Length: 71
Image (cartoon, rainbow, N blue to C red):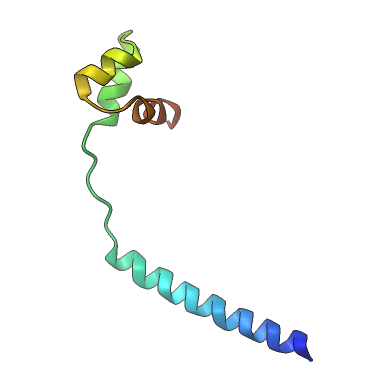
């Protein structure tokens, strides 16, 4: 009997979550990128190292590696 109530509660919770997610997606807008990912990839393709790209674009090493690894 308790399993029936647990299943019902899980279904109710899931419905509320889906409603919240749908509501949030319509409102949330991510901010614009402060740098161009393609420009970073182009500089790397030209043979520049990560340190030089950091100096030119003024972004962190972590961001550069994220850009280069996510294609």
